[in-house]
Image (cartoon, rainbow, N blue to C red; front, side, top):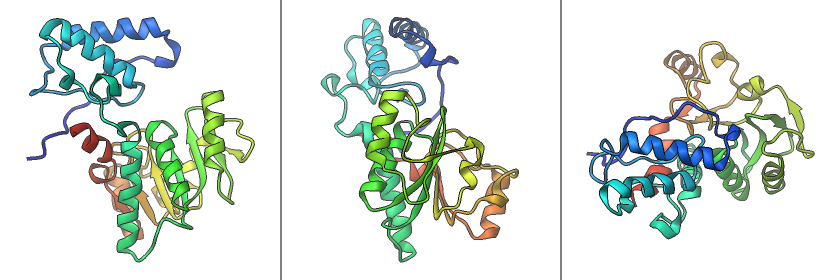
Length: 252
């Protein structure tokens, strides 16, 4: 009886290569094609990769042309269109809460632990900020532009400014560049895959040094890797729990 959760769907494109008006037209036509399949009591789209509150506002507006004003048809929309306060940070904040709860069970806390975060989009960047504030040490992060490492801990607020200006972590002065492919096997206490599915597999599972894996992405660990890691004694916090902060606030 969980009221939320379901399929994934979207448009195969690279939003970074499209203008705002192209993105708007694409989103509105997509909505015209699916407006009969979505609805406030049937299927409620939520933002994910490559989307933001603006995308959700376009879907709401287009859907409303067919069905009358229906703010409940999408989540993740702007606050002034009925969105929830804190939705932006919700998934990343949930990752922090889930990590705290897990470490607590092992008599540990976030403070002083070394974290590696793969993915620095909405989820990864918020998780990094909140972990940093809680005293955790983020030693490596990666995104589509590249990967960086600093064994003494990365200054996350300064990195956030860099990412805003340069559209990625690449070239950040407060850390060394590393190979993006090695991010998952960097030395750390806690690994947070917050990008794509299937990134932890039998090819790299044996090399993972983390004691805990917090699944902030959807299905980042494949079944073969899962088996290898549990034999090694690595504790994996599954995505359905670890990244449920976003869907919880969406439900509000």
